[in-house]
Length: 180
Length: 180
DNA sequence: TTTCAACATGAGTCGTCACTCATCTTATCG
DNA sequence: CGATAAGATGAGTGACGACTCATGTTGAAA
Image (cartoon, rainbow over all chains, first blue to last red; front, side):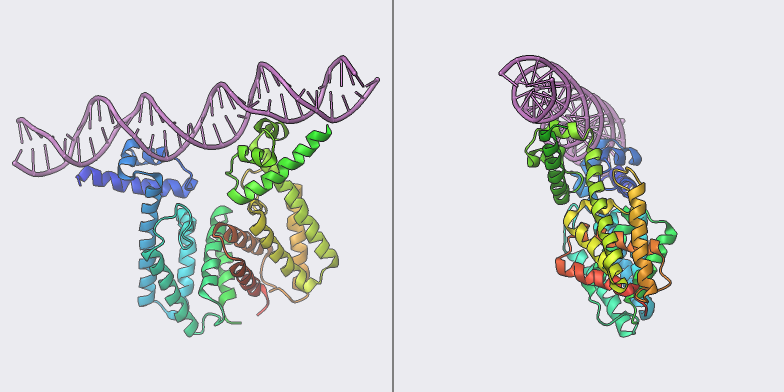
């Protein structure tokens, strides 16, 4: 792969992440090209279809989220790591936007495979640890918590909550997960 | 207004509610026309722009939701009415779909006015009653609960939760609102 | 430096969708 | 019954967005 090609690919990915974060996945490929400073054809050379571009962004993002989870599993306090991660995920979504379609595989549905499983597994591990440390209600199931997570994420994005409201709402959700 | 015109208007509204519920607000006006059994021109005669059609649906829906809230205020048990209403709103959204953009005024933003205020007020009344009956934590604020509501609604829709998962998740949210 | 495959370019194609309008149809009123 | 205005029709228009391709440019191997 030529050097300029690699550089352009990176630029396009960065631009796409910004543009899709700002205007949602319906933003035009042309705007991505403009933001990246390349012609429209170049975008389609690197990503033959728009969904490929979205898929690439998602993949990068999942990678980051998995890394973060594994770091917390390795180094975090079991009592708080789960809550920190939940908060981190919502905060990321508030910034990155496209994140929303992550744990649910929807959207331009691609590769429901390995990474999703790794992510779900890491999330479960953090949750189990918190439960064993007595920080989470023993009767909540992981799918419910993931549902809560996607809901909070969707909500934070779709209705443009203020930073303050988002924080308070997330805390309220997390509070509901603690033992009474 | 001629009789056939009134009939067509009603048909279009019903068709639009179905179509937008199934395919989201991005469904084409042409499909609404087809489902209603009228030509495309007829739809635009009654609703000069697509957003007018969406607005009309929203207005009907808000009317129903307000009525339901007022019925619960008048006849319900203060301890449970709030929770029933919250559940009802999420269930409605699961069926009706377009509901999502309701309490947040977003989407085809029209008339953030009277009805929204009535809805917010009714919701607040139910919540206050529940709090005074000792059924809701005294430290949660209405805006947080509305945020939770929109989040749950968005989540239930966007990721297609099963009926069972939706019920469990809503119960988990509501449980978090009860005093410890 | 030469050479050429890889790459970039952007005007153009095709499909879709909101919306229009000239023409035809019909409910309703006297 | 007419007469007619209100209403219905659906082919057509313009804008937009994903994607293509003929042509021009350049990194890097020899």
